[in-house]
Amino acid sequence: MFEHAIGKRSNKVKNTVEAGAVKKFAEAIGDSHPVFIDDVNFFRNIAPPTFPRVFDYGKIQGLDLPKKGLIHGEQNYHYERPLLVGEDILCYAVVEDYFERSGKSGDMGFLKVKRYGEDLEGKMIFSEEQVVIITEAVRKEIRV
Image (cartoon, rainbow, N blue to C red):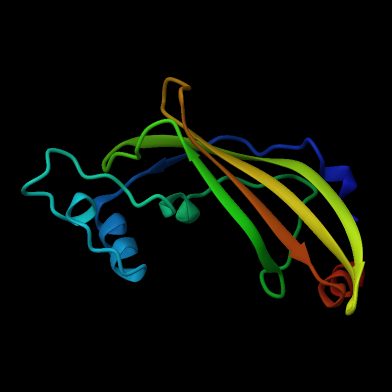
């Protein structure tokens, strides 16, 4: 179903690690560690490890997934260094793989997407690998 998208990537999109967004994110995940929210006693705050989830990674042409009905299968982050509050980063995504399996509730698709964040000089800050599961019900919707 999405084999044609393997290897495609989005354009780089500039994102800013904003202090207010980091504080709200830390509160939402229940992690009020001072390194995320205390801008008085720390020289520079950092973002929580899963904060890149909120970034814009651009659009991958030909990969039009529905907004609802997908299953979050897996997600892993790898950091070269912390995300610093106030910095600008460039983010993009690449479709790494797509495969299908049959299960009790029908055929399911497994879409593996890798997302990246670089500083403005092109040095890698983090990568994120995620697997999105596309259920039979969603697959039928997409085909219509």
